[in-house]
Length: 172
Image (tube, rainbow, N blue to C red; front, side, top):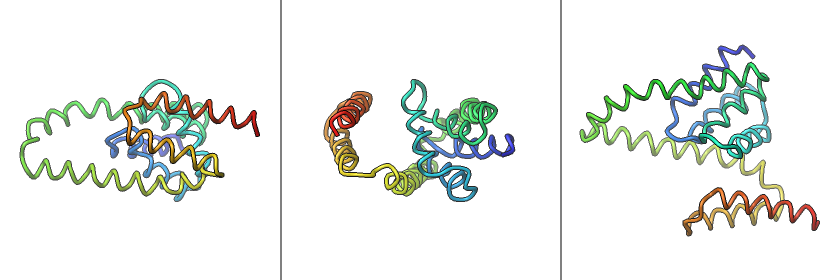
């Protein structure tokens, strides 16, 4: 794949998301559905690799780019990840001065709701790929319930899920 096109695709995903995994629907559409450069399983792997290490939630974009184009792709992915940080400063200054205008507030609310809908729509196929048995289903439901109804830090939940996965591996 052309590195410049890869950069532009990841930049589009990075610029149009408002949270780390908010870009996931666009990445899935561009790389899995439209261009068939990777599978849902590979995208899941990239997300897990990006979320496992320290750093921003959007770091999975570097892993996606690496899977698509190796080390040069990872560099393009990193550049696409950091470019919006330099563009957001003037944008935040402009929006911050107008945040109390009802039309601007409504536009921001609409963007956030659309982002939530996109994230939900891309989560379903990725969940279908990841949940392959009873143990996985129980882990997903338990994780959802714990994160929804407690104040447990997600890092502890991930560590507990990893330990449960290892225990299942050794028991079964």
